[in-house]
Length: 197
Length: 197
Image (tube, each protein chain N blue to C red):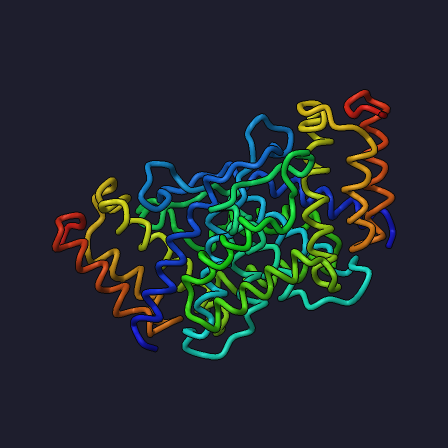
């Protein structure tokens, strides 16, 4: 294999190290330390392997893993947008598209195209793999917030309606998890960690 | 799916959060911050996706990803053993076996068996997937140390022979990367970052 291809691969591998510095709002389980997006991506991949049989539709696990592993790489340029941010749309900003072009574009052409396609499929959220991957992406911070006495719910004062609406994505990807997930949200309200209105 | 299975999955998902607190000796690229084992596992998965065509033998990428994602989970109990530690063997300690039984054993039976098998296959290092996964595991810290002005080479005073012997695993898994990797080691000696003897 030509060494200019290897050089591109190595440059990309070094570049994505920066995802370890992108801090999310949500904190680790039972913790005060915010999670970074590389750790988050690893955790989603582990969850996807463990819960794959819960996908509403049969999925290609390899594609799901690719999705969750690369889904946040664009944050290296675009930063992490908090899911309940009212000023900025969480999905598909132009900034993220440019980031995907720049960062995945560092790779050899074929791999670059593959990664951009997988990222776009995740963002579009239409295929079985994207729905299941997005369910995992919504479940992890829900588990974290409920382990952290409300976590970002309390910190930001978001209400039940907003949380419930965002978390419904779990049902679209893995319905058998939804009663449990919804239970955690309701528990948050009962405990006064999440505002009802 | 029965809710006791879900309870096991959730308990495992919470337990593995602890891997984010396991600190490795090696530092992030161009950085003074040590890497944790969750970030490291994510990075190996990204590298495996990017470099899979460089495997000496054709591999099942899904199995490689499983390997690198779970390979360090045992460190939650056993801790990270530095690769050039002279007092403790890096591979296959009894402590790690017990850790695999305890941590993967939290999962529903079928998934637990699958994860333990994949982990043992990685540790044994005999199959094409294990050889390629281990090559990735050796390449990342080499790239990091050479970006960090010697990094753990200088910190621990390890010598060329030891580094070269450990890194030869890269050749066994992905020979086309080896000349570049060997070049980085030689460069370390030339720059005085790595002792010749």
